[in-house]
Structures are given as C-alpha cells and as structure tokens.
Length: 65
Image (cartoon, rainbow, N blue to C red; front, side, top):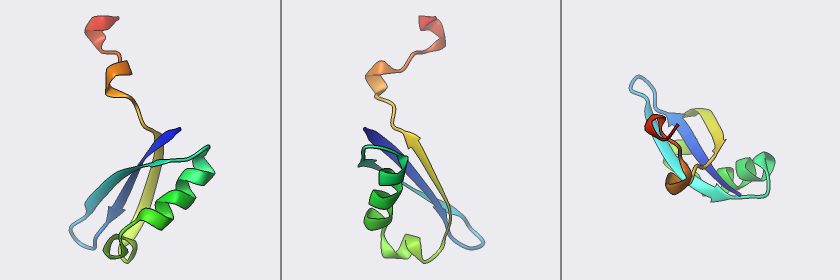
C-alpha cells in the first residue's frame, strides 16, 4: 500500500515536506518515513501525518456523484 507522508518543520516559519512510501501498514509507513526523511527536516520536525495515498485516477468529485 502506498502512504503519503507530510512532515511539518521549521521554527518561526513552518514548512511542509511531502513524500510517499510503500508499506504493508501504518507502522511500516512510519518506519519507512523515518528512514527516508531528509536530515534538515528531521532536525526541525514537529508533526508527521500519515495517510493512504489516493490514486488521482480513482478520486471521485462532486460532479461525479
């Protein structure tokens, strides 16, 4: 399964680093994200979000409903 990882980092001016990892579950996604996160982001990270990555071709839109 593919997960989207979003990491908030930075001091006064917060920034976001977003990337994807493949893992069997959320625990594996967090472990993979920790290995893949750039050092400059790790040093200032204060929040990590994990969510299942949505395939853009599979997304539904209001007009599709």
